[in-house]
Image (tube, helix red, strand yellow):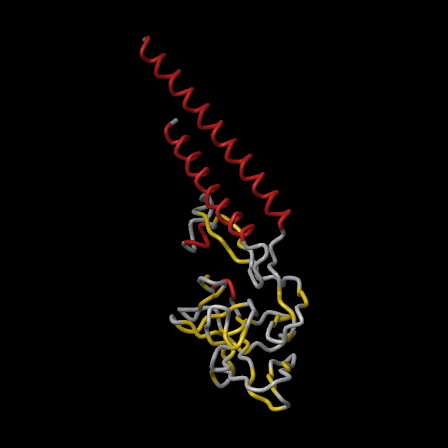
Length: 237
């Protein structure tokens, strides 16, 4: 009986992790470039490579990298990527990757993120001096009719291996994602890629989580009552 309570308690704890992912998604429904998290249980074969036939082990979250809707802003330095590509940015911890294309120029006329991190080009930092900024679908940046740089777009063979960082960034510290040049992706200047979170789906998910959690509570209560009944019967013998 005690084992039954332990199993149900562990299952209920998984629902808390599932709820954390859902609430995080809802909190970022209006964050450009945000990618929704999906909760799942890992199969033993995923964790250990063997042990077929045993129950699922442990919760995990995966990132849904599907394309979000592109919204027109009219600001040339707002950029969206059509395709699987990522922007490359220089952070204090190293190079990171993002889908959030809300860029601006700093006091040195360098292209930076809203947090002040340099957006990387094929040759490093990108400096834009001049008016009439134009950005081609290939990521070539021109100002005043002169080419000033080319965005460093990348894609990954295994995006699931990316590590989620702060500020909507992703990292590949162990080089497991298979970084490559972001061919096939196109830049849309004057647009932003919106979050791919679907608010209605997340609300339905929260309702399902609540109902599942309540069902586990009822099972735990039933097992506890049976334990008390069995203990009283043994005591009366």
